[in-house]
Structure formats: C-alpha cells, structure tokens
Image 1 (cartoon, one colour):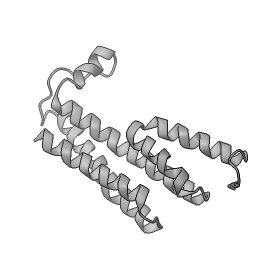
Image 2: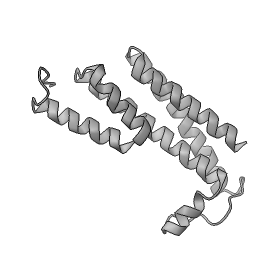
Image 3: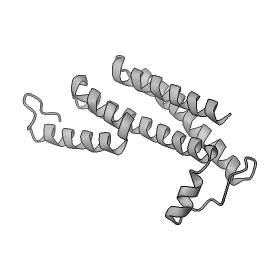
Image 4: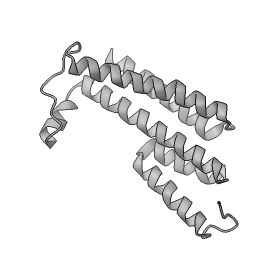
Length: 149
C-alpha cells in the first residue's frame, strides 16, 4: 500500500512540474495546480499524519520531533517516509508555483525560470534561493536587458 501511495504522489508531482515548466501559463492553470494537486497532496498528508497521530495507522516507534534520534526513528519505516515525502512534494510544488507566478508577474523570461524551477523540484530551498538571487540581480540591472518592476 505505501509503495502505491508513494508512486501516485510522485507521479502527480512530476506531471505538475512538467506542466508548470513546459505549458503556457494562465490564471486558470495556476488555480488548477493550486486547488488540484497541491490541495490533494496537502489533504493526503493531513489524513495520513492524522491517522498516525490518532492511532488509526500504527507507527513503529515513538513520534519525537525533539531530537535527531527521534526524527530519525520517524523515517525508519514506510509510513514515516511516505508522509514525509508527501510533505516535501506538496511544499516544493507550492513554492514552485509561487516562483512561476511571481516570475511571470515580473516579466522574467521562461528560459530563465526553467532551471530555477528544476532546482526547486529537485532541491527545494536551492531553487527558492536561486530565484531570490536571480530576481535581485534582475532588479539591480545585473542581467542585461531586463529590469523588472
């Protein structure tokens, strides 16, 4: 069961990232991603986490966010790995959507956006920091021919 949930969440996120990077964007697309897959991933996370915390799904070991050993024990089983992975998928996709929407609003070329979105998909905060740096350089006029508002 956990393999199927993991695979379905991965496939959904992969399709969303491809859509976000490759397809023309509109307000309809932004809303579809936000209220579709991001919401589904978030609700899946909520249900699974609530089920574990409520005891409906047994977890192996104690849930302890107060120490490295405690957090490590959360990820020592399939339940913890799947719930944690869905957390990453949901938040990284949300950040990618924000980056794309913000970059579009500031007229940042999609060719510049694409590698930043790939970095966000693969490495989360690295993509976000890359976007922030790129946006700042553009604002300062360091990237030739582009001065966003």
